[in-house]
Image (cartoon, rainbow, N blue to C red; front, top):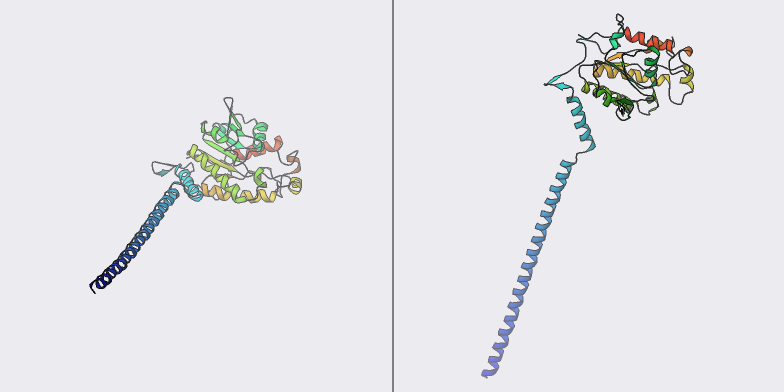
Length: 298
């Protein structure tokens, strides 16, 4: 009777051991699984934090085009300030909302140290009037964007852009006429924005210089009616924008079209052989208008 009892007790002990051992194994397995899940979650969170930190850094180091443009404009605006005060080439109290009024005629020495910037029409002005004392930075087809990019001026045997040439030049006045070639541009806002950058650049190079923005001269009725993009209506629209820009930028606006246009506002048939580029007689009228519409520096 003893042996069967011993066997029963032994079997029970083994069974309990197996049961308890299994419970311990399952508990250990669950603990390990829980630890693994926690570790995975922590690793994921850390990875997300690292990724967020890298993204923020990239955004800081690589600003958007809009931000870069604003920073560029800010640098340009600040360039016309010295010792915390704005440097202006304008006559005190001058009304920039209207064109330069008629004034006593100046002599040819007025154009000593004066730069003319323009396209082939300005080339014709210099050639046909013998304005040899002025500095001529002109080029056929010159536009408000190519003054910065096209090597068009010969300085000591090297071709440079108009703006680079201006940086190498001593001057006290600048006369600008640009725009007829740009009448073919689809967006007038682009034209006037780029023209404004020309004015800003001149001011940065020489804050004390007088800047005269000339009206775009009209073309003949025939050219306006037949040319693919040069239209007197578009020229008139651009001139209105130039007047507004001149007021905003505080530079002088010269209504030179008054010197050469007919009663209908177009270029007379006898003013130019091609309806665009002025003959000598009309170039003289143009120069005479410039000499009788000046602002004396104070």
